[in-house]
Length: 224
Image (cartoon, rainbow, N blue to C red; front, side, top):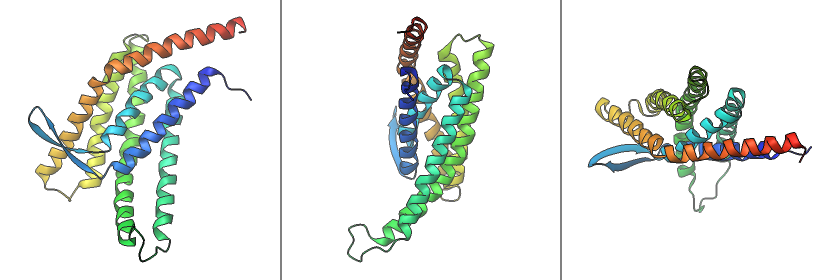
């Protein structure tokens, strides 16, 4: 079966989405300190690759529809579970005493990764499905106009919920209550910086996909 160019673009977008999601899961337990206008924020390293998923979700939701976006969401969830299973299996295998990566480190990493993945995946499913639903609702209300508005509004809302859930599951009891909310606020503010910072890229990609879709469908109609 020969895939159309439009379908190939979708596959490429989904591939980038899954890779970014898995990278975010692996880096989620690493906490960074970043400076924003003199204010030190505690931010999960997973925020950086996870920002890529915001953009791709909006593109797929806009051009391929709600079902395609939800399917991509569940696909990412499935691959994350697969990665967890493989990581757990490798952690149980016998390790040589002089291995450059000691068994204790493997087991410790496995525990951290598993715990963070549980938090990340719970927040991911809730946030993604909420994002997709809100995006489509605004799209209907605005009669498919104002792409930037629906993309930004849906992400701002969904990431507020996502951030509270992922930090709550992963780090509740690890930090004091003040430090916990600093981590929540720091991650959310940093995500908002990404949302508004990548707006030009989001709009540029939207324009290119819109132009490409018209060209490809015109070719199909002419039998090219």
